[in-house]
Length: 165
Image (cartoon, rainbow, N blue to C red; front, side, top):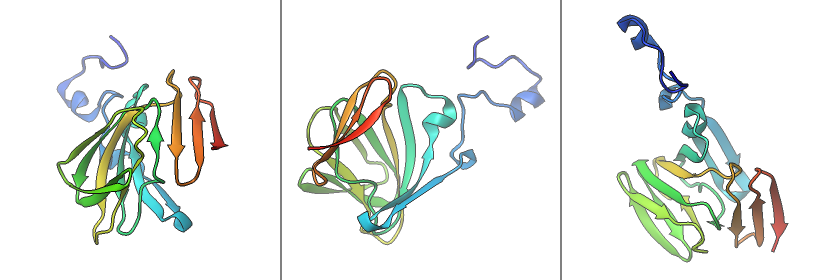
């Protein structure tokens, strides 16, 4: 049996033990981040790491009221998919803003050059599941931050370098 196929056990033991590829959000440590001067803050749960995902990055991010998830950015080779789990927030795509709410799904194909970010102008937190091809696992990517006039270059071996544009 492989890593993801647990050995047969008694019914009682099987109920208490789960395969390493299974994780519950409530059992994963949360990481908080706060870059006050940029208005970027939130809490994130790394489901990808917790379940042993190698190529797919999977996070749940909680965006507090009045905060944004990141600087406006676009990826050259990283496709992303977002699913709003709870609450509502706004998605900025280029110069446009869109209201998104629980149940909304958003796809961001790689290489569009259209930058994106989430922000929460509302009074309650918003939770968004974020999926993407994990950089540094044989995938090269360039993250473009147009407002900062910088880019992050991620090589196939996972090395990262910030460069001015």
